[in-house]
Length: 303
Image 1 (cartoon, rainbow, N blue to C red):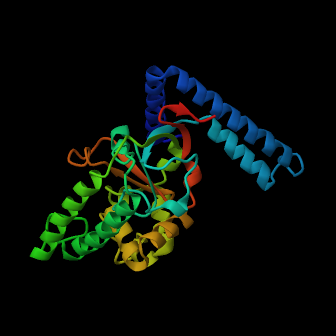
Image 2: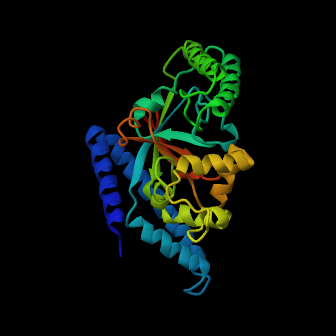
Image 3: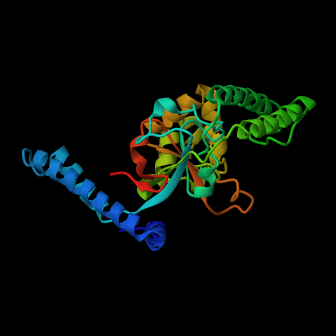
């Protein structure tokens, strides 16, 4: 039986679909037909495979699961901006764009298209951009080490941290001046069912999705099992991820969570964080890039 959260999630997804259809009915219809064709092809393939095994076989069960999910196919429309042009996401390219990976290692997409547009600009000198990004990562490390608590990039214990923050702002400004045009804006479908399984950067452990709680308890029962003496239900997702990153680097932390069934991170974007609610950004961990279904590039549907 669906929970109240499932009902709200489905309603929110349906509302987003209606908004997309009202703003761009032709593209929405093309997207709907494309999704139907994709699902039909997948069903036909699985039907062929399941015909060769008993009714309780693994392929038959997988088909049943896929058909069940088909009754709730809604996904969130998200956006990605990049100076590069491509038709599918490549995890090998993580960290080569303009972002500093401040919210974890992965592929970044935004619920608000304005956020994505900020990363869509092409650049005159990509080598310069790369050098800027390398320096930004070094500065972020200095700022993390010198801040009162991780992520508090304007609350420092020494002049060293303050100077690093000033340099960080200056480099961002110089990097942005390298922009020449609007770059590429990708419209993407991200399934709600996977969004609901992501680590929430802003929520305490007690409010994380069940699969996230179980994954962390499996990885570190001494810290995250409810019966452990060190268990802290108020620990926010930000500190949880940072703890893992400190143990094994950001890249390995993302890979480990993906291995445990957590597809990514969700967090309030810059415009929403002061309010505590609003639109979100999403970090998709390596191995889950197939969840990002590109629908169009710069307003042109992908055939």
